[in-house]
Image (cartoon, rainbow, N blue to C red; front, top):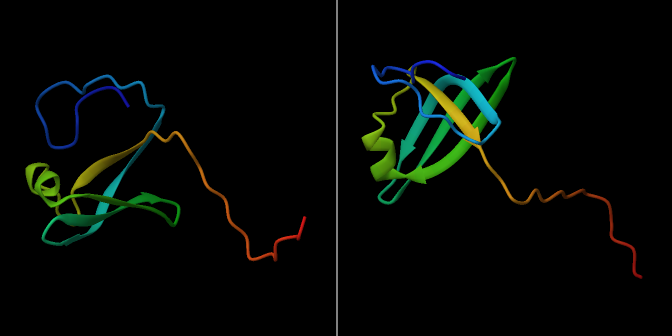
Length: 87
């Protein structure tokens, strides 16, 4: 996680987020306002993120380029297909 950011010459910025996944951009679908970015982190796993289209452009995200998915969440919501008990 330390070192240089993908494709950059500046040292990486230290982050408090521990969930950092290095990977490769698998696809970028750009819309008028938002872009869907899929990062392949290996082992058959992909992380999908919606970011602003202006950020995708500023980061120069392209299929095949290296990227780091940083996850910082305050909530995780779990769902199942099981019927809910009436209680």
